[in-house]
Length: 179
Image (cartoon, rainbow, N blue to C red; front, top):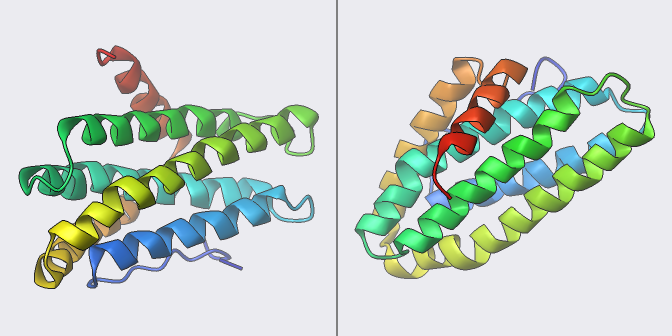
């Protein structure tokens, strides 16, 4: 088992930001596999995904994307695209969080939609943003960025991010932003 008591989310404190983000991406993929399993505790899995998604994404936006943009490793378009995809992930996650019946066809469809949204973002982020970090940021810079990203990610996890109310707030904020 992978948050809550049955699914603890790893909380490293240092490392190369690229490798750390990739580790979270693999954890998301493992959690998606478990979410598709009808014998799993799907509510628990959704809760863990929600906390990790918010902590991971919000820390990326506040620490990684802005730093990479300042270093000219990525441009404003890539930052905005990544943020928009985080918003789409929160929107798709909301359907899972608000589902009444985790055995219903509607829940299965919501899993599909969320999975497609998340996996698309992971693919693009790994190709467009993490490759730029690999080539345009020194190893020491990636380590410094990793510590900064982890500090914010872990702070958000410790604060209990990812509740349904938290996701609704993030979705509302995204809807108010100009497109």
